[in-house]
Image 1 (cartoon, rainbow, N blue to C red):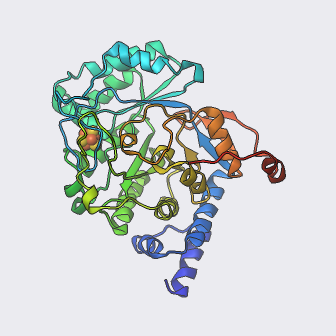
Image 2 (cartoon, rainbow, N blue to C red):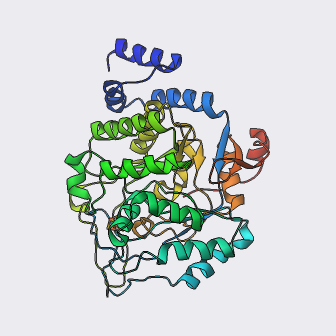
Length: 389
Ligand code: SF4
């Protein structure tokens, strides 16, 4: 990047001006990671100070049976496959209750698009979960699933959301977004939900007072311009509804899983590499800089590893996903020793070791508890440090 453009971008960031598509592409074009981090950290600090939010949640996947076969997905199974499963309602409740002692505040539920499960199963699961764990918020279903429910129930998304809200739904999840640009989407996505329906459903949810997350799956066959366009579509929708509370860049993962049948389901990995840590940090930073109207940027540590998660806090991130248990959608593909569980104390240590102040939040980003800031560096270093994977 020429020095003139660099100064121009700095001036825009420090004055709070909105960045353009060209600015986003230029930022991705820079390999000066320290510079990108400095800009993103400025914006993050202006918005969120030295706080890092986290929550204590559990991920539940009610079924891995899916009618679609997205090219990147190592989670889906077809009916009758060896390790295909679908939870009965009482099994889902029992799984959720296993974490009651951890003062769980959220259940995060996403699933395959099951070809024969009836629509009534989904509100029933939510009602039973809410009855068993009334203090826990239910963050459930991608826009893709809501679109699927329209198909299997004959109801509109409006009616579906009303029924799910009545059953206890507090937020949708942000998945199903992948990369919206059709050039990429046509090659990686097999389900029928694209920008028009994804945005329609989140707009509807926002209209009902719901706050939702939004995501981007990066690091596969897309180019930086696709990432920029993806964020700008979401930014425009956010201008309209104000309903997104967090943006979550999700790192695409190869499929190393030893599944029961030994099959590699990911059809992208022959032609891709996974994003390196530097690319992930750049993606967090540029996302924070472009997405000027979303309050938070999250690192979902299960997909990035704990080292990148800790570093990301200096690259625009101010939110970490919580004490995740049994995350299957892409953790099935993780081969790098990243744990699939972090307890509250683990997260506190990880955040404080990076020099930030931990704040526990609920699904609506309300503060559940403020924790002490990190002790001075000299004291921290007096104790042996945890070595993160
Ligand atoms: S990403 Fe979702 S919709 Fe696509 S195959 Fe996997 S489970 Fe099914």
